[in-house]
Image 1 (cartoon, helix red, strand yellow):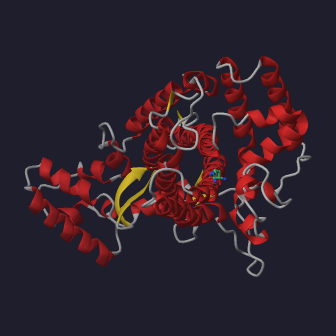
Image 2: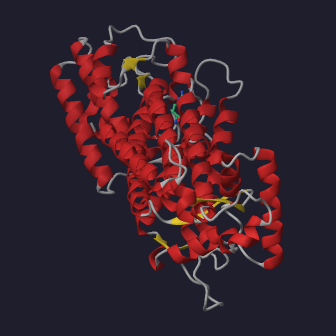
Length: 465
Ligand code: ARG
C-alpha cells in the first residue's frame, strides 16, 4: 500500500489515489463542523459494543479518553485535519488510533461511515433546529411586545398596495406573528422526523454483531432507531424538509423585509429603524439604508437554492448510500447559518422599531380608507349594499375632485349623495371608529389586538413548558 493511499480502505488498491481525485472526493473541509456529533456517536457506539461483548471495558475507556482528548485538540485549534483522510470520520478515527494504538482500530466494528455520517448529520441538525426554534420564539416575543404597545396606533391597511381600510399597527405585526407560528410548527415537525437513529444500519444491510440499537438510541437522545437499514443510510429527506421549512420561513421574512423597506422610505415614512441596523452611502451623505431587511430579503435566494440542490441531489438515487450524498452538507449547513443569521438580525431589530404614528395616521386619513365604513353605515340605515357601494363611489369621486377625504366633508356635502346620511355618520368616518368597529376574533380593533397578544403570550409560554 502506497503512502498516498488511504489507510482505512487502501488494502485492495494497487496504486495511490490521484492527488486531484483525493482533494475532489474529500469532504473534511466542510464536514469537520460535525466533529462533536461524530465523537458523541462514537462514544455511544463504543459503550454499546462493550455491552455487546465486542470491546472490553478497558478498551472502551481508552476510546472514550482518546476521543475526549481529540475533542479538546479540535476545540483549541490544535488538531491537524488531513485531506488525505477524506472526511471528519476518518480523520478522527486515525487520530484515535495514533493516540491509543490498536484499540482505535476496533471502534469501527459493526459500523460503517454510511450509518455514521447519517447519524452525525441528524444529530447536528437536531441541535441546530433547537436553536432555530428558540430564535423564532424570541422574534415572536419581540413582535408581541411591539404589537401590544401599538395596539391603538392607526395606519392604512393595503390591498394591491393601495390604501384599503385603516388597521392598527399592532394588528399588522400580529399577522407576522401568525406566519412565524406556522413556521415554528414546521420546524418542530422536521425535528421529529430528523430525530431517528440510522446507527446500526452499518453500510446498508445491518451488521452481524449482536448490537443493541435501543441502547445507542437512548444514549444519543434519538426517539427511535430507524426501521430499515437501506433507508437509514440513504435518504436525506430530513435535510430537504429542513430546507423546505427554511424556505417558507425566509419567504415570510422577505414579506416582512419588503414592508420594512417600504415603510422606512421617505414616501411612506411609517417607521424609523435605529441607526445601528442601517448603513450609509459613500457618495450620498443624506442616505440611511435599511440594509438588514434588504439583505434578509436577498438571503432567501440562497435558501431556496439549497432546497433545489438537495431535491436534485436526492432525485433518482437508487438504494442505498451513494457518494452523491456527500453533497448534502454544504447546502444544509449554509441554510442553517443563513436562517440563524436572519432570525437573529430580526429578533434584535424588531423590538427597536420606532413607528412614526403621526405619519401613519395621516396616510390613513388620505386615500378614503373609511369608504367601506360609510357603505356599512348606509346598509345599517336600510340601503342595499350594492346601492350603498354606488353612493360611496360617487362621494369618493367628489372627494377626489374637491381634494377632501370623506371625514373632511360637511354633512351637506355628504347628504347630497343620500338622504339617509345624518350627523351620526361622522362616528364611522373617523379612523378610531373604523378600527374599533372590527371587533371580533381576528379583527383589527385595539381590544382584539390586546386579546390576541395575550393568546400569543400564552402560546409562547406553553412552548417553554
Ligand atoms: N464523507 C462521506 C459523506 O459525507 C461519508 C460516507 C462515505 N461512505 C463511503 N462509503 N464512501 O457522505
